[in-house]
Length: 130
Image (cartoon, rainbow, N blue to C red; front, side, top):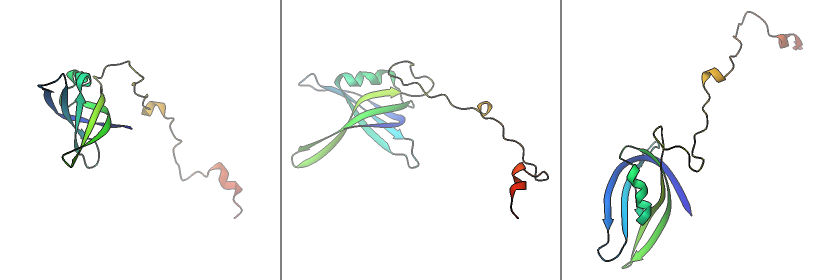
């Protein structure tokens, strides 16, 4: 099952490479934009970590990730495995898979309501039975 989270990149760690294999990963921390913000650490494995090359601390991002769990020596660990990191905001690259924002209504798009004048009766006031 996959999840997604929006937030601000708080910290980018250096790439970690294994001494015995071709495995490498890069970890990063995202601060959520909720009423009570929290810092969440993600791991981007192998070629997925290359997406972080264009991201810097302070950028608004959308992270798509999976939750992975494992057991080691009778202890249990959980990793948040980021498989896609998209930059959000004004300086985000355009195009792609439909990541464009919806147009926002402005006050010019909203018709003006008629002014309320308590001295003149409305047309429907004549229909009242009392």
